[in-house]
Length: 151
Image (cartoon, rainbow, N blue to C red; front, side, top):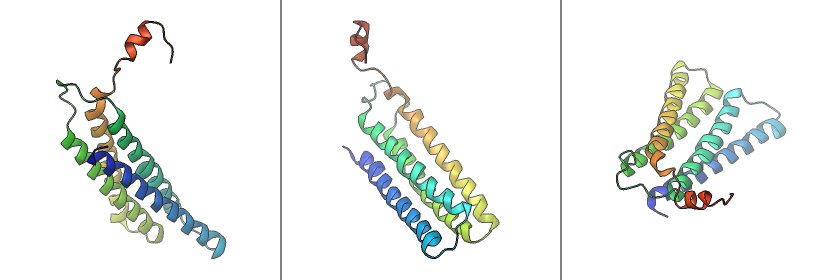
């Protein structure tokens, strides 16, 4: 497992822990302190788990397991993959912080920041899978399928 894959997977696990702790906080607020939390907190909790943890885990595992790029693959760029890692990590972390902040205070620039960081997340995912596109291919299985083998 090479370094960039480890970055994706370990960061995914860190976001999972952050999401679980956020959920625990929400449970205490609701059931122990018997106050409430806003929709923004629900969104922050859900988003850090689904995008921060699940999506980054998918990206890391895809980077690890997919076949190596072909020699003439012009789309795959390890430097671009690393850029998408940093874009996803920073945008996800800052979106989480902004949504938690937005759950306590209404500040216009916080709302704008959430949209900006969301856009960066989408852009990072598009760039990642654009770069990985050529690695999504059959490697040997097409011969077994041609002989009638079912998977």
